[in-house]
Image (cartoon, rainbow, N blue to C red):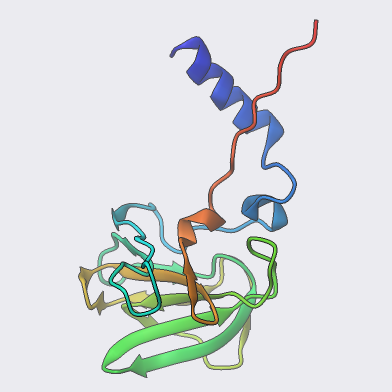
Length: 162
């Protein structure tokens, strides 16, 4: 391991997330484990422009899908022929409240209006429009963001004092 890589790893372990970062605002968990991204988020240029408004996570049918943070179930069932679960979160993300996380390709084990806590079972993987696994989204109103931002812990290196 190079000295720089070692410093980054050590800083991540010791410093955690800086104040104001999404990870500092609340601790979020991955909805499936292991977390393997098959297709990343691609922000659209406008509301009707092409993009990939979420991430596709690799997961076999039957894999449990868990709440990444506490929230209230807003959708749990079939929408346009697709199995979908959606949670509304009170925790701030990017400095704002009211964000929803969405899970396409998930057969719900929760019901609309139910409060869930981080790590609680939402459902099991079936399939989604892009294939197998889970399509995980993050949105506020009509604005989409990369849900992986919820899991990232930015590293800030500070000079050593002698």
